Image (tube, rainbow, N blue to C red):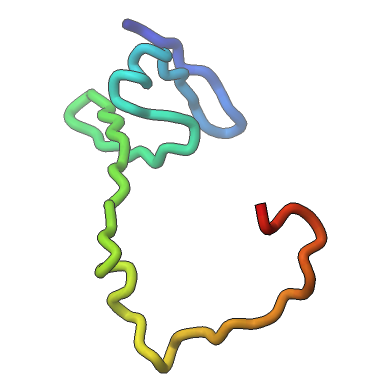
Length: 80
C-alpha cells in the first residue's frame, strides 16, 4: 500500500489508509511515536498504560481528600 506526502502548513503529512489504521487500532487523537531506522520512518501507536484502581488511589490520604460540597437543587434530569 502506498501514500503520497503532502504539505500541511510548514510540515509534511501523510494519510493513513483506513485498513491500516484499523489493523493497528489507530484512531483520530492516537498518540504516535516516530523513529528512524536507516532510510525508513517507523510510526508506532503509543500504548496507553492501563492503571489499576490501587495505582490510581496510591497517593490518596485522608489529608488530601476533598470534602463534599453542595451544588444546589437539580434543574434538569440529574436524578435519572
